[in-house]
Length: 337
Image (cartoon, rainbow, N blue to C red; front, side, top):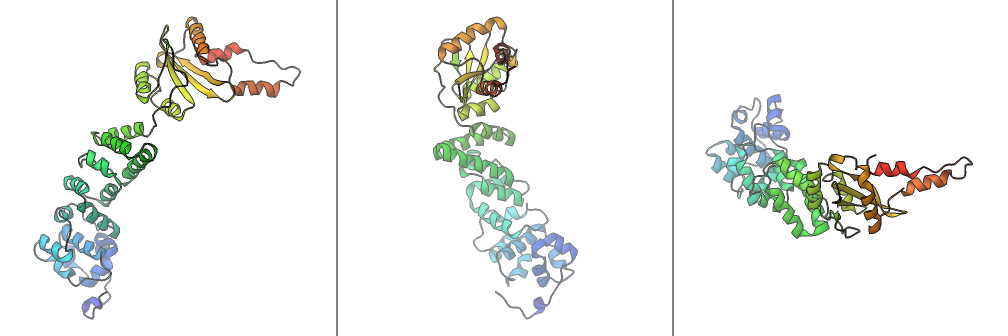
């Protein structure tokens, strides 16, 4: 802590312009360069950032502060920040006109000291607090895989880190690093996040039935995505998540027109036909349904009402005029009417 008895000890209020450019550091800067603060204000942005960076790591006003605006920038950096990471001089020239929050300067120094983060900063046309704070959150494996080309912001980086940690907890660090390698090969942020969305879904559990010559299980994420492409339906989105959770299973019927068959685990009947649809979620032709129903029943699948339909009949059965729902409309619904 320094105690000053000269002109710096006098209270100097910063002007509005200094407040705008120097932010949280304006009052301390005004004590060194009183209003109208000309010496500081006419300095280039890199010098002003250096002053703020030095102040960010000091409790008071370091005695060398005035000298930071004189001579070559490289020498001023050595004077104000001995041991500063390589690349700081170049970075200061790309940090904009407005002072950063104190904590962001610390993150910048840490990023420049890391080879992969520093590589991203070297290629950035503009360096912002959002960029450096985002880099601090990105898994090292992802930065390495992308060869320093990815530049997510802080919010995007937090999502990437959460996804990476989720996969590491579920499948182990080796799998998480492999996923990060896939993400890093993306050409765009959009493409990267599409890959992340695919990888956070767990691989599918084993199908409940091994299948037959005409009923083939879609037993993997890759098989589900391939079927979604061929049938032009939603198997690759929400249905894939359901299958990964273990209460839904999907098969492809190869007898007659191709049909995607969805089974779900019913609490009363066990595995049950939940839906069957042809290309683009079209209705299964009536003539082709009996063979599919027979094959499903032979495999051990319940084809008929679900537990809530049966429970609904039980709830109403005590009425003297009760009539059970006819099964045919319900079966028709399974196939798209």
